[in-house]
Image 1 (spheres, one colour):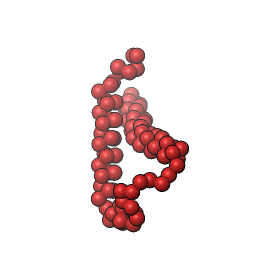
Image 2 (cartoon, rainbow, N blue to C red; image 1 turned 60 degrees about the vertical axis):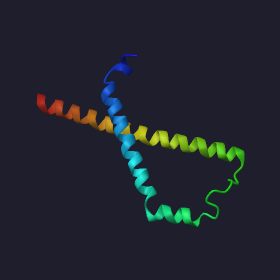
Image 3 (tube, rainbow, N blue to C red; image 1 turned 180 degrees about the vertical axis):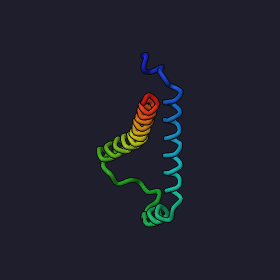
Image 4 (cartoon, rainbow, N blue to C red; image 1 turned 180 degrees about the horizontal axis):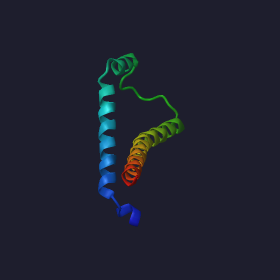
Length: 95
């Protein structure tokens, strides 16, 4: 419980910033011609999906996993870089 309450504002801010940047990135990709071509080439834009039930469940699980892990790994990387920089600055000040 001590770790959860330690620096929670900074960690929450990092998570929020990464989520906002990731959302902006996905939104900007949606507005490209590439995405428009993909949507235009689909034969039935609002048709009933023809996938099997198990495949739909697997794809949904995969999508949730990817959309959760990508921002989490980006946050983890940013936190590691920040901690490495803090250690480097601390060592440089003492030397």
